[in-house]
Length: 92
Image (cartoon, one colour):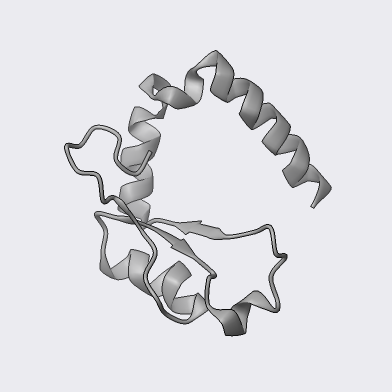
């Protein structure tokens, strides 16, 4: 979704930084990109090994929400995946 409706291929970034910088500071200071976070080794010891953060600014969230209905997220194959993923979230 980070690159949906753009000609760019760098809409999702993984930048080095503290867990709070990756999840809060970077998305608030760069409203055009999405960020994968909680990769900081000092934060990892407090996070389940199977979890990462995906953070966006509110403005970027609204953009993604606007195009979600016409994106791959509504495809049947993705719906099956997401249904299983939602079950996994409920277990956490």
